[in-house]
Image 1 (cartoon, rainbow, N blue to C red):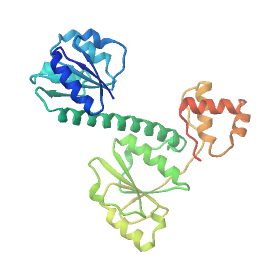
Image 2 (cartoon, rainbow, N blue to C red):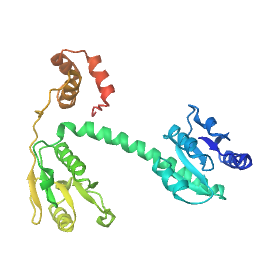
Image 3 (cartoon, rainbow, N blue to C red):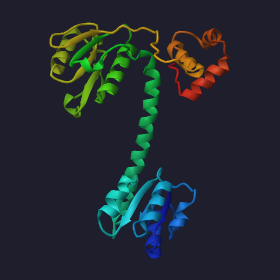
Image 4 (tube, rainbow, N blue to C red):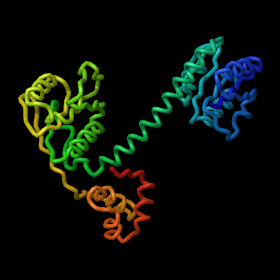
Length: 290
């Protein structure tokens, strides 16, 4: 990882660089803020608060996509609160142990990695669920616990995904055939249970009884006492309130029909080449299920 140390106390900066290099970090030192305003990209920026406010905030803005950890002498609004509002990740107070600094770096390194993964998965999910998202359904009126019945599990998945987005609740997806502890459910969350119909009648009834008092959505073809019940119908016709651009229309058609028709047939009906279909998949991050 590349680390930029922005510190006017040269001996302190050299000491930090020397210790971090022992742990495999590649360090550079800037004793003036103008040296830190180059276009070079760094994974981590260690920024001293001893510089003037104007130049100090320019460094923060220039490295807004990096992990920025402040090197502070004392805690105040100017040294901690305001910089964090401006985009700083964290702070560490001088003097400090190098192990504590490394712990903070590793924490934010993991956080950024998971943040990127989370955004990637969100885009993939939205693409996969778009054609199964329920239309003309008021999700605010949904009451849990709820059993949903549908001809395809993907229709139920689309409903649950839309409900989680609309309600702002976290969704914990579980397989009924796998053991899970409802005590692990976090606040502001609900459980989505799949494959309950693959259990024996007795095991299914027992699980339903256990989950009756828990915020739960269950995919099943059968009703059960204490649960609301809803049958989901899926229509592949899209409701469009606005005129779509040609590019957006083609994107929608690919999403709607890629699981039904081969690319040859889709390209023929749309009057475009198979290569054009592939290019649009790449452009819009559309992933075809194998």
